[in-house]
Image (cartoon, rainbow, N blue to C red; front, side, top):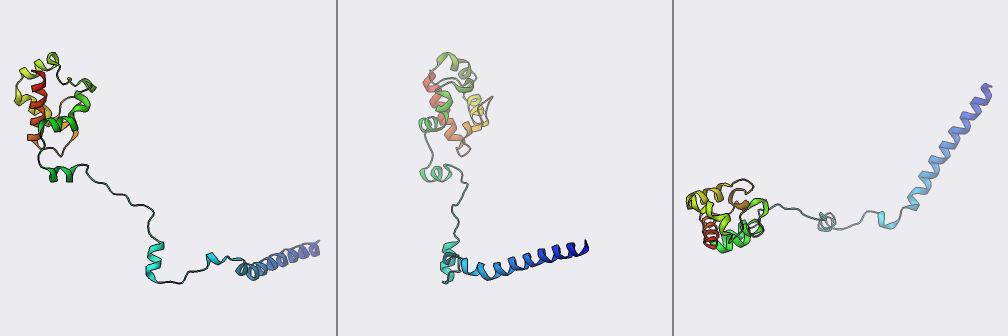
Length: 149
């Protein structure tokens, strides 16, 4: 029985040895030419290892606002406020709705300015456009109030 175990082990070791020899002898000849190292300058290498894409985060409109100067009330309204005040989204009083604006107008312009600049209920500060100046927001408030009178 011991002779059988020794011969089985010998056959196993011989098979492994032959397999290793075959891999060492055959594998270098089966590598394709496109897998071989490419000779070239370091500039070629830099071109080959460029990233596929780049990702940058920027504040939208910050450069545009600085370049174009202050915006007037109707422009601010059209670009920021109209999304909610044209549709009445989240309870925003609609532009031109005299009944909805009357109690707000009665509180005075300073209270309306404070609400628009600081935010109120679902409306974020400055309507969510933090890059607006207080004067630009006041211009939009004046425009909305003028539409409701």
